[in-house]
Image (cartoon, rainbow, N blue to C red; front, top):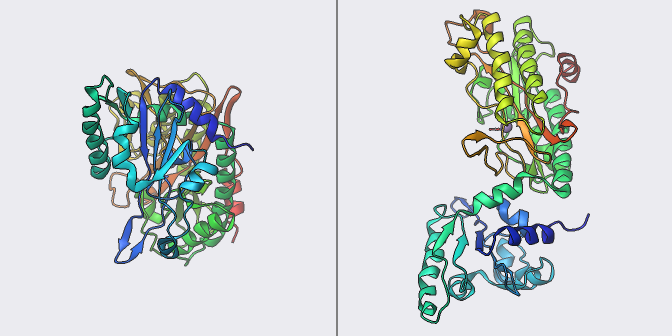
Length: 432
Ligand code: GLY
Ligand code: MN
């Protein structure tokens, strides 16, 4: 596949409509003492530049002969011995297509010159005091040439707005990466269902999952893997993963592998002993019905919000049938009483970030879905173990089912369809 980034940059330069843009990568975050977290490239930089090293800034200058400028860590034999190989300004030119490339340390002094003539700047202000200082300082220093008749970026727009729009619709290269991420993630969930026998610990399941992500060539987990046995499933972002899996309980796994920095996001809930009990089956069946109803609304032209409304309608009716809520279903929905057992949204955009860039509302309304967008669909039902209002047999049950769905003109394309989901398929995958 040809490198998609030159055409993404051309589109970005066009959509900037005469404004300059300055985007920053991140730094190696310190874990403790002399130890650092592995650097994960900034998604906007990955999207437009493909540069994977830390301490990078990309400047876009529409209308200039040299519109794409990269500031990168220069080659440095001694530093590279300690912290890893660098491409340097040479690679920024030759391999990454920068029209101009400079050492990152020259950013503050070169920016005032490079920004001359631009009256607007796209920049993610407020996210880093250090970056704000460089950018606002540069703008202050552009003032001197003003006397000579040039202009300065007096107006700053948050770069996330336009980039969110562009990143929302995935191109072919992005969809190929997401399909690989989905395939790797399916394998990881299958490994989890086999690893999660009675007496195993949640961390053993986590190890099976994260090991599969790496073994199959992914860049790792797109977010910290969640393995919640029994009532731990009712903690939505439970990442301690320290408990023993008990016979007869359920295990909820929310895990997505990244491939080429694009992540899947999948949740499956399965019986540790290999067979759902009758109350577990009832809750699972309800959540699955809600998920299928929501996926049916993942159609081009429908508002994003409809998926949630569809899931809430099914779940609330089911909460009454299961004896969790009492009253008229429509009123319970209007009063949002379902939130006691279903307290999160039904999905989000998916791509380079697990909760990907892009606005959910246009004006006052929910955004209409369009072909090329990728969403998660993830309803759940969570009954706390100490909920004395709930039927005793249901207490401590938490179920979430999540798939990744590509919106197409022909209807929803479930990227994670190969991951077992029906009661029968899940029990088969969990056979002990
Ligand atoms: N997978 C975690 C989340 O969607 O929040
Ligand atoms: Mn999700």
